[in-house]
Length: 124
Picture 1: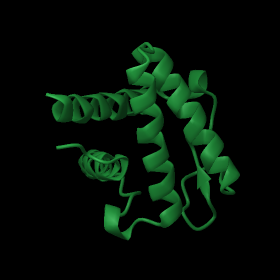
Picture 2 (picture 1 turned 30 degrees about the horizontal axis):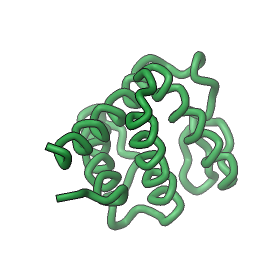
Picture 3 (picture 1 turned 90 degrees about the vertical axis):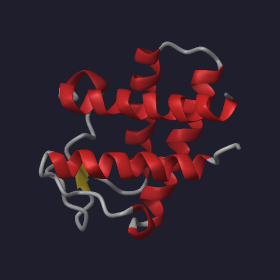
């Protein structure tokens, strides 16, 4: 069975929602309630990571590239750096990869690992 980018994105979104709850950071909404912009950015991220994995890009490069693409998509949608505020469209992670806190870099690697695992599962 082949999973669509949207199905994988929804699964990963649920994982991140749980991670946020565990750290008492309630930023995201459940996938079905999330705004179309966030859903589209997440789906595009899955598609990009799947392509990068297919072409054998190193995980470190995928993570940095994914973060750069995420920042570009958020900025194009009107987001700016700052304390997280959904209504004002500000997000603290809109920074260069090298300035991103380690815990946030870790989330990029979790995202990549989840995409890889779900992609490999469908191939197996």
